[in-house]
Image (tube, rainbow, N blue to C red; front, side, top):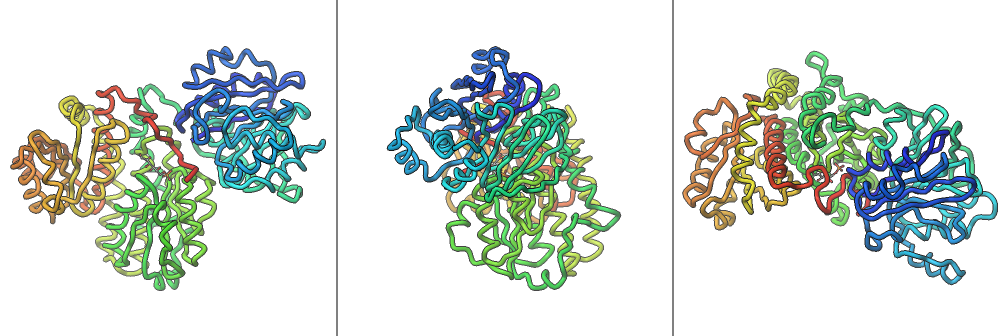
Length: 610
Ligand code: F6R
């Protein structure tokens, strides 16, 4: 999705804005642009395509003089990628420039109205109306004009604004779209996410819905919709800039796969003290817990898959029925929920529009909401009754890796804590699982050793040209297969499908022919024999099977063609380990196919529109 960076200070804005835009590339974009004020005049440079093209057009930002500016990466929604549709957009009198993330739902009626008043539009975007509307509503006081603009806009927006009339001030407004103000020393920033400004500051203030930020190089003021000053408390982000850089890896995705031992430790360590689980401020009030009859786990994409893994674990240990919902389905399903349902919302970015809408819907029907989120102070984190941060660190690659495994571990912690409170788990089993969890980071580390990864590279070399790959498993291995298939298809563009192995004979087996590749996940001891039969059925039809099993399971080798292993681990928590092998498999297949791994086609990192 689109990205915003804004700068005000005493340095040349152009290079800083360009650099910020490069940090936002991961969100997905098809054009970019910057606007800088100099001598009371706003200059704009835009370009379709990669940021390198913009970089070249403005000589690394040096071509533009001025120390105040805004920049944008656009992901086309209304109107094709083109120079006129790219941001920043100018007002007709060229006194205002704006960048916008989100969708203005009433842009057509506003456009018609403004056109009838003589305003000329140059492109087809919804965003352009904002620039024209500001000009129209401006009568010498920008804060009043922005309040009036907020009143007129419907939809979602994060907007950065500069004005030739106030060349030493940067403005921002937002509703249902993320925007933070970064606080520097003699300089300040606006950004659609922390990574764009992280090189300059770790101190941020979050702009709330329908608020206005008025920012100079040395001051920040915030107003509510009534024009009243709002006091804000800055907070510090514990991410460091190295985490948001490739640091010697060819791709962010590979770096983030290798960061998993550290990320998992960060999810686990502060929460486990001896045998006790402390979930920050989440206590699971015994009375509320005893009234909970059902748990709904909601997310999109990989977060939804993490929820499916969590479901097996929570149902098994807490003896509460758990439902998984895709957020986009949930919100239009008139869901049966209320005070007796606990809703767990999962989102790495904390900004996914459908997931946020699902949270709000569950909440409005009386359900308590608990969010499992990575990005601190994100919309979902703030809207939920309780939040458990995964602390995975910044995730830049579009395909989630450490975001996903840390979500699973967070769900395990929630499940164990609830199970102990409810008395549905024995102390012995509880302690076994705690021990298993604390060993996970080391086990992942072990799997990432070069010798282990060599085999995956070898298999990628062998199978990268396949047109279709199946993933199968039973129970929690089926849940893990869903994510394995998604990872492969999104970054390598190979058609991949996951199915519950027992379903094979109910349809999918008709697709198995000579050389069809199937990855069979076999980590559940009690289901081993069932999986053995499924593997044999695939092989009998000419298919090739790579089994993914525990190193302790020596028998599986004899019935499959090839083998990938995970270190010995408790069956209940194996999906964290299988995920790592499947991520590496997808990565090396995509690498071999020459795909754009960090930014797969048509995909964006954070889906802030429906
Ligand atoms: C796949 C992937 C997506 C996200 C989904 C939800 O690799 O990253 O499927 O999992 O868009 O995003 P969040 O977790 O930010 O809500």
